[in-house]
Amino acid sequence: MATDSDLTAHSAIELRAFIGRRAISPVELMDACIARIQALNPAINAIAATDFERARAAARQAEDAVMRGLPLGPLHGLPMGIKDLQDTAGLLTTSGNIGRRNHVPLHDGSLVARLRLAGAIVTAKTNVPDMGAGANTRNPVWGATGNPFNPMLNAGGSSGGSAAALAVDMLPLATGSDTGGSLRIPAALCGVVGLRPSPGVVANTARPLGWSVISVLGPMARDIGDTLLMLRASAGFDPRDPLSFDMPALTAASAPVDLSTLRIGYTEDFGQCAVDPAIRRTLRQRAKALAGMVARCEPITMDLGDADRVFDILRAESFFAGYAETLERAPDTLAPHVRANVEMAGRMTLADRAWAHLTQTRIAQQFAKVFDDVDLIIAPTSPVTPFPWTTLYAQEVDGQAMRNYYHWLALTYLPTLATNPALALPCGRDEAGMPFGLQLIGPLRSDARLMAMALALEQAFASDPVLQRPKPDLQALQKPNPELRSIVTHPPGTAPGATDGATLTAV
Image (cartoon, rainbow, N blue to C red; front, side, top):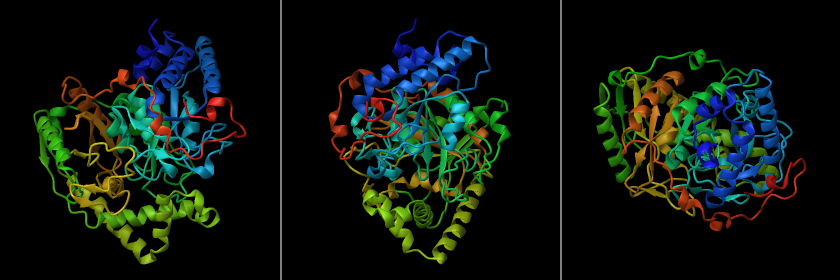
């Protein structure tokens, strides 16, 4: 029988196949994942609340279904990490916020419910920044998440706990969400895959502004195949989300992409983003390597206008819808970043909002024009290598002062504004020896095509030691890192509905 470490290193697709043919038991897999969490989480603090007792019970039920020959869902028996912004029935959902440190939802969020129906087993919550604001995963409830390649550096955010847990094989799959890069940034910094789907592909019934396109839910995994497996189980129409729709192309079998036919356009900065010179050099090296694999890989130019201000307005609008009432009722429970966004919205006018939507439309049209001549756009995902988790955000990039805590994320929030599907694909290491994530952006609502192109690239990278997905040194993560918990000021207390002691403390 395989060891725990051997078992957890298998892909989700392989694990699901093992379960289906009774080569392993869901109970065996669950025990292996729990053992991996208990062994490595003290070093990186990726996991927040856990649900091990109920997870083991669900694994026993999953095993029984296999033995009885019952129909099995596409994710049957697979342990799942759920981002701590997403509601999980009976399990703490704190959003890393002191005002929610004992919050136990009665119902699953829409994505969690869909994943359970597909057979996934909710095993643990993954860490986030306070209320998900920012791209450095740290909060006063659970502490900070360290990068698996160097726990003193940040893991990105806001899906940082999910990315870090995946990187060290704690779980085969995890959820994320993305407004300005919250799926893509942590995936890039931790060497895994994070997909921002087109708005509406994955239904989100918790979004306050039902027709807003800047925030989406999406899958995270260690490779493209697993990401697509989870996306197919997550996608679909939900009448409670007015943007949601069915995308038949996701479930249809697609022909492999012939890399030699691809036309790739690359950009270091979309014509306006601050990017560290070392990251620019790495991007150019990747473009040069790609040029020998595809029909062409050439630089593109874009003029996106004042995209930063557009994102400021649309982000502030979204935060106002979600948190204005809390700001009035309990302002001390909101993180400074969240308060800043809500207060920014209060200073804006209807004319600002109209201008932002007009300019956003022009940005989308600029992307569409580029795709008249290319099949895929590539760019860096992060403008900098991971910085210390103790630094709240990148205050300066390439000598340019950042205007606020999210300005350094412009490389990812510009594609957000265009609403094109985008993902972070591991592509070797940067000059600092940390993971480098290549951002792939597909044409409008071409999620299936984007995944097919990403798979072809991933397969080409796998045989190249410079381009293949890097993996952290697990031996270096055997020692606990108590500094990551040093910023905890309000740990979760006894909460109604908690299922075991582990739901109340970090592992």
